[in-house]
Image (tube, rainbow, N blue to C red; front, top):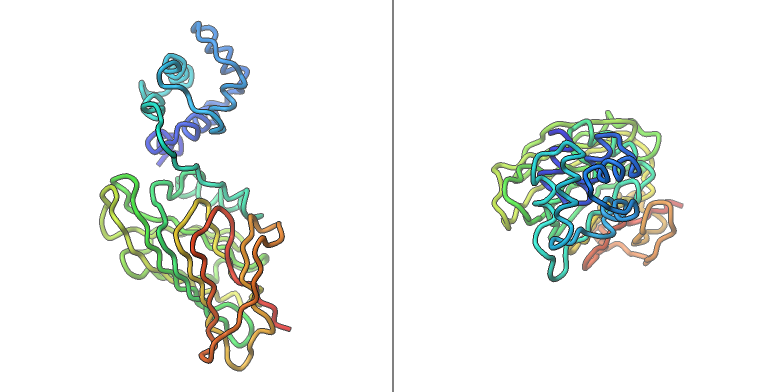
Length: 302
């Protein structure tokens, strides 16, 4: 789907407005000038706040300006108005953090999502992650083997038919050596690769109804053979519990394992807790809930 059409269909308002402005190639100064010709006065700073999601148009006073924006940007009537909605009460859902804010490979991820026709800021926007469990197998040669993922999510809207997943391998690795296998509740859709990043669709067995719970599983086999310094899951929005387990090679146990939380992959961890494996050579890290950032287990081999 065209990114602008998807943004107008899914929202939120600030993403749809920003996408429309980018699509039309208008600066905020030119946009404000066009609005003035329609006798609509909106400060450039207000337009900036609206497209960044720092402020929301007041439904009681700003609908005239929003309709003028539709005219200037060549959008269908009421396409932005419906995203403004009634006066907001209670706590609204926070917009998801962008990939670029969380990982160095965010630009590559954004390009691959765009190839799939998915707006990078709207990917999985209508799916709320309720729980994730993952089990990672480490091989005797210190490389990462299979990652098995179980994802439980709730649909915030009807009509959702897929989940888009992203796998970041080690820098310099060949993404063509990464294999994805769909499990329960889904089948593998389109796959896009660039460098060490792989983006893929998991198409559900049926179209979801609003508030429906979907349980899906999949596996990623990394055959690149790179030594594993750890495994981290990226969270773009608040999430329910996360359980990460490593299955360790009995004949080559790591020297140290540390449970970590990072705000992005360039910052030091805000949480660092040493872990110990059980008699079956399994180590577990449990996170009761997650805010945007990365959670995982760092591995030191010697």
